[in-house]
Amino acid sequence: MTRVRKYHLTLIGVAALLLVVSLVRVITGHNDITSSGMFSAALLLAVPIGLAGLGGLWAERAGVVNIGLEGMMVLGTWSAGWAGYQWGPWAALVAGLLAGAIGGLIHAVATISFGVDHIISGVAINLLGPGITRFLSEVLYKEGTTASVAGAGITTSPPLSSPPPTPSLPLLSDGPDLLGKLESTHWFLLSDLAGLLRGVTHEVNLLVVLAVLLLPLTYAVLWRTSFGLRLRSAGENPWAAESLGVNVYRIKYIAVVISGAFAGLGGVFLVFFANKYVEGQTQGRGFIGLATMIFGNWRPGGLAAGAALFGYADGLQLRSKEAVVSFFLFGAVLLLAYLVIQIRRLTAPDRPADLAAGASRQYVRMAFAALGMIVLFWLWLTVDRLPDEFVYITPHVLTLLVLLVASQRLRMPKADGVRYRRGEQH
Image (cartoon, rainbow, N blue to C red; front, side, top):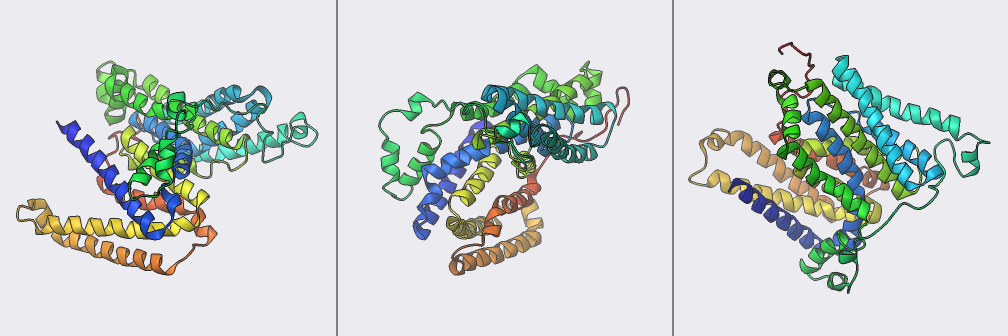
């Protein structure tokens, strides 16, 4: 019954968000914020972030903190660009996976075998990734080489030798475009729902679908198999797992190598979108992927929600810079809803005892929420267009805000980041 209630609450939450966004669209007149093109772009942009977050999930569920996702993602992008221009997109896919896995293996050797602090090792990989790829570019893409003749430069690879595969799902992409017609009506809520459904089903790339399916596959492996139970036990209490015969070292190695492979795969998708490798292509998506994992409380479902949120923010600032302003109103409405809910809880006659005891702190939070609501509403009334610099950092600001809110309910694996040695008790 508990799972059913959570499932229903999730659906209600999604419906409420869509209702608020639809209301904001009608008031502001920015129809693009719920268009199928926006949701399609959000899906494409969410995939690399989600894959990086999935990599972090595998490592940290096994007790290894992996902030080196960005560096592993960089290795994946360069390797995909290098292999792709010579042998095509499938070679790019394999090369990116292997390069990310090698980055994960380096992190595993440093943290698991040598006991290096996980944060220090991750930072080192984030520094090594761009450094190694720049060195390789200067050696292999310098002027006079075959790659240079094909269009390479110090900061970019030649285009892929053939376009990335873009097969679509025929059952969802073919037939009369009824959703497109409904979307064009701009009716309240109905056209927004049609835009959402059309954006995630119309001419959807099969590779994107396969990447999205890695989320439920991860859940099935980690929460529904004996291997997943052993892996999660290594992240909660490796010494207890060891006493039950689990090879903790091997489990951790497998998890961290898979973590790097997922990050590298995220880099491959970035290369597929651009049709080549470009230096700085990741733009911090590895760190944002780490934020989605934390936002999702180390669970695939929450991670998917976080990736969708950041993908949408990224797509919004790319497709419609003017529409970013409308989200001041969106934020104000959400804060108003938060205030209403908190007032109802505090004034309820049967409110919990712990809520009554912490009422003073709750009033402070509500005061800050009210102030934020007023500021956001004022900004929406007075600002017509944000400077491009502010629009560009929207996803990163959203990362910080979401982590600030989500930090109140986080519960990481107990042995995450703890140095493990066989036979020793922590």
